[in-house]
Image 1 (spheres, one colour):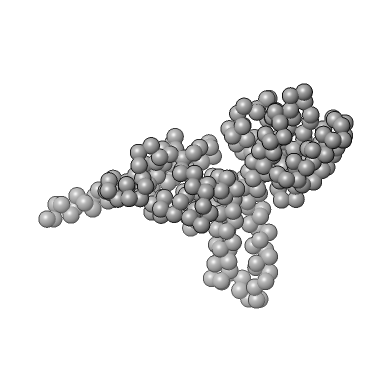
Image 2 (tube, rainbow, N blue to C red):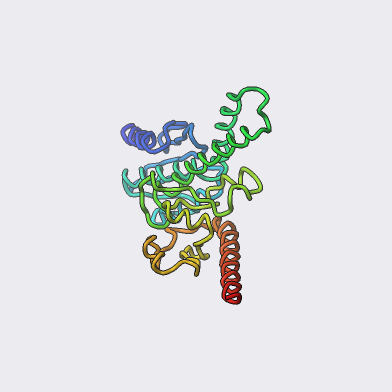
Length: 269
């Protein structure tokens, strides 16, 4: 690796979420960041660049492999053909590293500690502290969801931040821990109309990610809401499945309760 190649790799790293050079020698360059724990070791090949990632997030390599199947070489190593492809791979790795569960929880705890330390004494355990915890947690969850889904709706691909909502599959109040509340796989980034329906269990998604509407929604209303046959999640990771299962169970319960109410109403007429 010559000095020009090394400088090029370092610049691509700085521009795409890996701003620190830890090691640079004749064989490869190892890059890191202060914003996430992942490291990338990059070498120059005859036909592009070889990249190996080191991360504490177990989901990182499977997610990258799904997003860049043509670049996977072996055991989490990647090969890309040019500078643009290297930039895209590093950028996605950095986004995922900031979003995946462990990092999201760490970011939340740091921000929460700062907020709580600024509160007047004597508010520990009060409703004010609870509201601070919820506000900071929901903010960090939204940030993580925007990173994970690339700033676009998980179904439609709409990339207008003002209309996107970080929607929990297992509701915030029912989660057993902050780690579960902040788990990027516990929900989806959705446009406001889809979020409202998903939050109230009027739509759900099957194991393959296909959108399932409640029978209580009229066809005319579905069309007006933009709910058409064939809508589905852009992808579904294995880590989504337990949360999707929880949401579907509540969705089916809601469907059955609605059917029971309608049957009762018909019987009393």
